[in-house]
Image 1 (tube, rainbow, N blue to C red):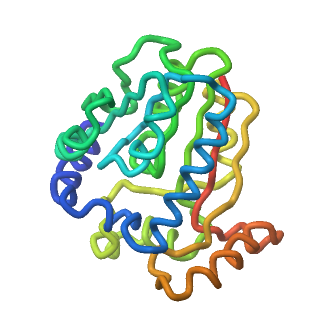
Image 2: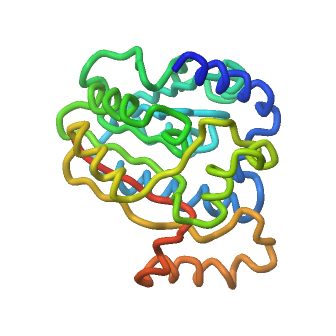
Length: 239
């Protein structure tokens, strides 16, 4: 585990200055992908007045920027100190901790809502989910989005070792099957579990084609069999 953490810390240092673009959030299409995830988070947050929220893998604050104002207390953890330094400069209201998600520095039942965007595939997912369950209060909710291993590009990025540096990946990064994720959340104690396909909108789609292609990409998420090769999975559960 420690070697994996060291790798993540070093990788974070290398990409910190351009992390938003490397992660695909900076392009016009990437910005729409961010907005869609924000809507999903807000929908799950909507039923909870002034919740205490924890973001796993806060990175450079792409999602925290849109969410923290809806909370009574917003905490963000990340293993990479460089990411946290960047984010601290922009958001004084957020409480930041450099921490391993697999060993969260919080008491049991500390949060009403926990979310993480593309973070579990860097981690020992079972250990991280057990910690998320521990620090959620009874009835608290979890929302994650993760890469789908059945997507052809994701499969190449995560499983073809010699191409990982080209895609900005580190050696231990992976992706997930829907069924195995559902079982994992169940084993960690979550209930009302949903794991669904979404996101065919590729970050490289040019601005000029977005209005035409985005509705088609959303339609593909509803077509049996076709939806199984979506780029991402959205995962939710309750304690």
